[in-house]
Length: 120
Image (cartoon, rainbow, N blue to C red):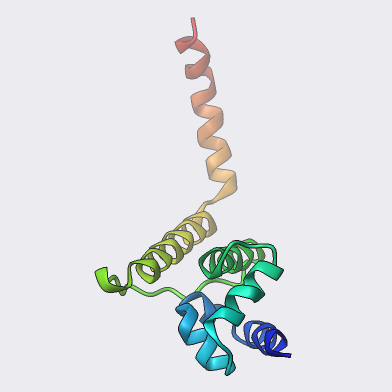
């Protein structure tokens, strides 16, 4: 029953969970940190940090976007790393969305003969 609370919470606010510490999720679900850890193992991951990475990857792969925060702190190094990851993924997503495929192909066509000359 306790693990179901965690699953329901994650389904409702998976983007928010990425920015939480394990204790925050436990408090939000009315469970213990040990229950969250057990839940993570039942999900096939080694711990909460890995669960957050899996959630972030799923969000990035599905294109739903990740919450982006610029907050970096030595006291919350794990969360800071998650913030850096979210920012980098968002930067790459925005860069790719701005690429004009037709223009890129034209540029690549222009440079292809030069690459063949360099190989000689």
